[in-house]
Length: 208
Image (cartoon, rainbow, N blue to C red):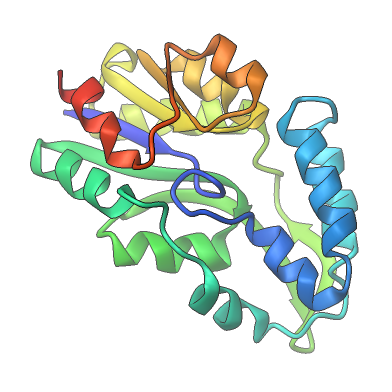
């Protein structure tokens, strides 16, 4: 069994979900600036997430359905997933974003393994806090190792695809790390840097 683990925001999908939620809170510009710095590796991810999520307090939980209707898969992403699944790969998602969005996206693609942060909701509104441990770069790498063990995949046969500094440990843990339209630090450290129009260009690299 082989495994491919994909990041979600700005990799599997074109947007940063936290920015779409922040648009409803009136904090999109602030959140986007913090996100950009975190993805370049200039800020601690967990602290930056707490700071960004705090700005979402009071947003109605109907935002999840609104954002799901708004997000778009990266061109070639569904084809990449289908091609890997046809080739016998287990495809999984791990995200510093939110399970409330990642779960339904995974279901659309026939993906059953995923891990992401969860947003706390009270009285049908976001509290501005997350639940449980933050999915930072160390947890992403740990999740890849866990998924590989679950499916019986040697780490050398695992593939990780991402775009930000939060993905670096996961990409280093996998036998093949692919940077997708990534920040400079990620392009430099990845095994392969892809800047093509479609994500399914990765199929030729992964399947050889």
